[in-house]
Amino acid sequence: MTENRQIIIDSLPTDRLEPGNYALRTVEAPAPGDGEVLCRTLAITIGAGQRAGLQGSASYAGAPRAGIVMSGTAVARVEASNDDAVPAGSLVVCPAGWQDYSVHEAAKVRVVDEGRGGDPAHHLGVYGTNGLTAYFGLFDVGGPEEDQTVVVSAAAGSVGHLVGQMAKTAGCRVVGVAGGEAKCRLLTEDLGFDAAVDYKSPDFRGDFKEATSDRIDIYFDNTGGEVLGSALRRMKVGGRIVCCGVVSQYDTSKPAPGPFGVPGLLINFRVRMEGFLVFDYAKRYPEAWTRMREWVEAGELVPKQDVFEGLENAPEAFVDLLAGGNVGTRIVRVAS
Ligand SMILES: NC(=O)c1ccc[n+]([C@@H]2O[C@H](COP(=O)([O-])OP(=O)(O)OC[C@H]3O[C@@H](n4cnc5c(N)ncnc54)[C@H](OP(=O)(O)O)[C@@H]3O)[C@@H](O)[C@H]2O)c1
Image (cartoon, rainbow, N blue to C red):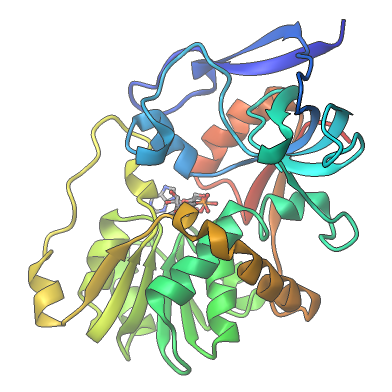
């Protein structure tokens, strides 16, 4: 028998997520049926939005429940196939969940080009959901123009560090908001941001005002909470707020209400505040992949990864991400 290690949701978090909310079990690997493929997980990605899924606040994830394999996207190798379109040996992206082996309808996995993607884990980061989220959120919802000021929160995270760099390709002035001096230095010294502000600093409000002295054309909001509250007060007339996520309110059973000043400030500054879900852009993903590949190959977009080793460490990797431990896309390597 081929063993399949699985990380299951043992209990739903009642407050902050803990590794103890998960359990490891070993079962027999599944066998593919007609038109199906057996996938060996190589790496999974963990994103902040998965905590919204556990909280029950992500409409696309359905109601959270215990006793099932934790969901997640993987890059995987097809080990056995019952569909000629996806032969054994193919490298694919699939919704494997946190486990070694998974079975999928061949039509529902995405075969990726090994030659062009570079590190296979890039298919989970810059060419994965978070890269696409950065792309469509910034360009379609935000609509940046040259010389405009773009502010992004959780700026050193997976979505955030890509948003900032993409905004630079559009000729914008980019300000990142992140937790801690080290992350802020990385943004300005390594990733080309024009300024970075530490939201954990006691001087945050003043620093933020100084970094946005010309006010904000586009605020790309990954966090909600205090950073959104501050950005609302610094918007330009006609500015846009791109509502991408609310990470400041995920890791709790008592999320705070939205910021003071909505809708008053939106009215006074004629600001458009708009939410989006990346999945609505699925038909246009190829357009984003083409442009992102060009930027990566030209060195204009530098995707960062943050790697944990071992499936058994996925719960710790998730808890650590929510506490701000990651820079770029968090990847858990499961097999080589
Ligand atoms: N709309 C969509 O279709 C879509 C799709 C994918 C992702 N998203 C959203 O995109 C956002 C970013 O997701 P990601 O996967 O790229 O995660 P991430 O930014 O890589 O990781 C989360 C980061 O959030 C920051 N954070 C944690 N608690 C915070 C708080 N209280 N206040 C401010 N920042 C806090 C931490 O960085 P610091 O060290 O800076 O605190 C942490 O590194 C999430 O809100 C997610 O839900 C939306």
